[in-house]
Amino acid sequence: MISPWYFGLFAAFSFLLGACIGSFLNVCIYRMPRDMSVSHPKRSFCPSCNQPIKWRHNLPLVSWMWLRGKCAYCGAKISPRYLGVELLTALLFLAIFLRYPPVLWLPYWIFVSLLIVATFIDFDFCIIPDEITIGGTVAGALLSAGLPAMMQTASHWKALGLSVLGAASGFVLLWGVVELGKLAFGRKKITFPEAQTFRIIQEGDQPVLTVNKDSLPWTELFFRPKDRLILTVESASVNRKALTQTELIFFHDRLETGGRTWSLEQVEEVTGVVRQIVIPREAMGFGDVKFIAAIGAFLGWKAVLFVVPVAAVFGSVLGVGAILLGKREWSAKIPFGPYLAAGALVWVFAGPKLVGWYLGLMRG
Image 1 (cartoon, rainbow, N blue to C red):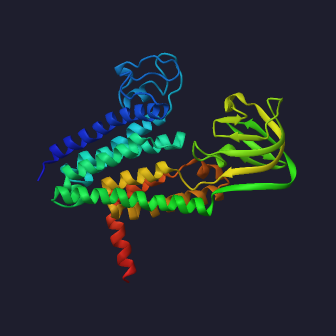
Image 2 (cartoon, rainbow, N blue to C red):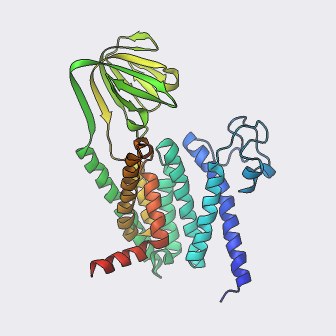
Image 3 (spheres, rainbow, N blue to C red):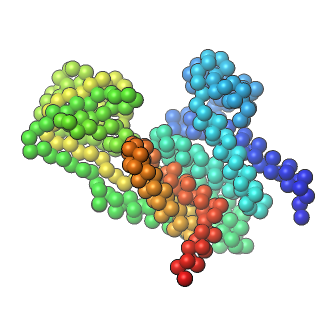
């Protein structure tokens, strides 16, 4: 039995390692969705002044509090999320140390790191990069083959097979959900018996579409970068300049019409008369399908059958809570990836026990 001194030493190591890894995950979260290299430049930099950050200003957990959440050079505010990611990673690394034997520390540390990066990128950009999804699937399969204890077997080949089965089952299950969602929801097309006036203006930190007296904020219209809002108009103007085109195609960040593109930041006001509106309503993006495949590669097919419904429950609970609080936009802003990550964490730390408890209740 390990002595309390060694136990404390390894626990501290796990926490500090997690904090350091969390600092690197912050780099990934910022750079990956912007198509920037996570290794060049090697040193972190301030997003406001681009000044490289000295090592003493980049100590995990410590520097943010020491600098009071501000850049040491330009004084710009640094989001508390940086501290939060470091602390979250440190706590999860420690929890894995406490929950699992040493042979599983490395794969589960890698796994929770992937979950954290995917979650925060999906929060901000509604995408999960292929480096996380496809790369995570490959990593899960290779780690399972090398460490068959991940799949609760002693056979390397069997572990590889179970990992591949987990990835495939997750992919097929959520792909089916996406396809059924398209059939059930598709895109909502609204055709007006009489042409209606419309207006799109910036209100606060986002645009708002108003047709007659009905208004919809941008976050309730767009969930994925590929989503499109299509307006078939009789007449329209952008920033008080008349357009001759009859179809306006809006993405979450731009307007396209007649071969011309406006960044949404350049658009102060769009007005006109509309005959038909097509609103995107896709249930979830394909990145979520690849993400559950990565989860399945690490955790196996049983975990997939647990994670997907638990993620749906999390989403439903938050949605109902947001409605009761009069904050419907809260649930609209959260894509499905973070719910999948939350469901995966529940499985890692308590899933099999919860399943056993539930089956016990079912048996009476």
